[in-house]
Image (cartoon, rainbow, N blue to C red):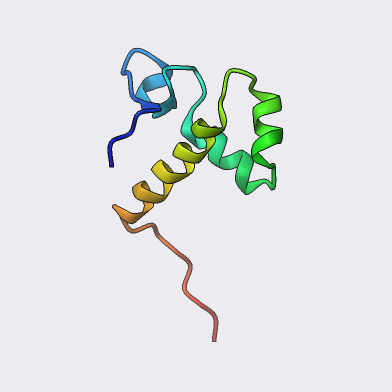
Length: 77
């Protein structure tokens, strides 16, 4: 998938993936969704964002997780 809304610039925000060159990291958007915020609430908190930005940030994060295995705690008995 070609990312049209996600940018990485080593000179901005330490090179972390951001939305459309804004200083809004993908991780911030994903974290807000994880905290239970709706897309409308996120757009209200960050007026420079668009609905497509939230959607693509989630898609990007999903693809990033597919690309590597994260350490998990062992399941209990």
